[in-house]
Length: 169
Image 1 (cartoon, rainbow, N blue to C red):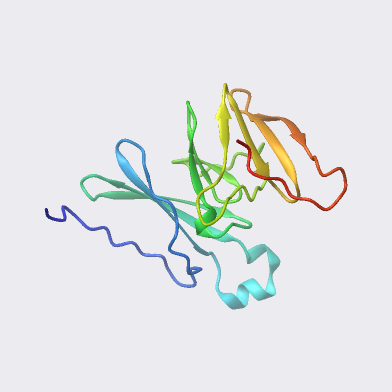
Image 2: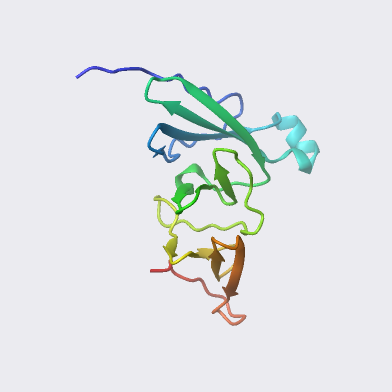
């Protein structure tokens, strides 16, 4: 056995240290998401608008040749909580917010969601065109209609009490 190629992955200055980002094979390429701060520490401390992250989605072909798509997010989960969601008509990258792959375009209809479990990947249930998951800022269950591109319903079972919900099964 022999290594066919190597890909030098550059993460840039000020990248948060977390080497647990998911890899995904889309049938033609390996997808590798990497995030870094878009601005230096001093600029981030002065201006709240500069506290987000720059994401670089590396798409490496089986030949070792790559393309990189970049996009920005205001806030992100640790890389160990990111996940790829394979839906019938598209591939999404969940980093707290949801982004279409390969464009990086944010799915505005979906909320920021900490839909992760343990140090593994996100917990999402897809069935009959509906993506159901727990998360968000609080104890909510979301039902996203993938065909219509909109949240069909949300449920907050805690009824105003302090509670958290388990992953949907």
